[in-house]
Image (tube, rainbow, N blue to C red; front, side, top):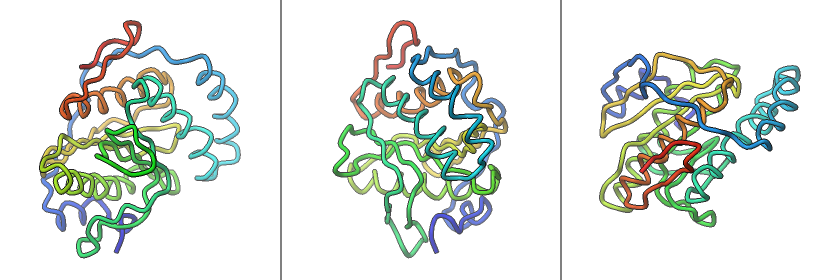
Length: 218
């Protein structure tokens, strides 16, 4: 068993997670200003990725540039990993390759303190990806508890590139946003992602000060 074999029901049952569906999980979230570089990339890439419509195309042409922008907005204080094995507990099925993991550490040679799991929705089915994402989040929590003796809230996102849905894991309590967010306005997607990593950095003692034109997260 591996992450991709989890649906949401199996994740909750086998990993002892309590599930709560929540409207507007993050509340009002002002958009952040994004770079002209990202705007130019998305203007060119989104239509092409939609037309070709393969998971690889959406991953490389939409999701990866958005996460690189997140790293820039976070001042380079986070790490970004793609397609790495994250084997935490084979007995629980918490093993396999993750699409994207964001860490609380800027190190890239070694994964430290994962805080955000981003799952690319297979066959553009976001709901089907929620279980995989929940399993990766649970693995991140266990990993952090082993390494640091504690774990801040873990966040997750399931995305087709053009639609995003968010999750939050607090101890064993899994909250799933009922909303799906379109990529435009991209500043809203990045505001939520920045909020997620800002919470974790603050909880980890590192803190995160965003630029004044982007709002402040500490």
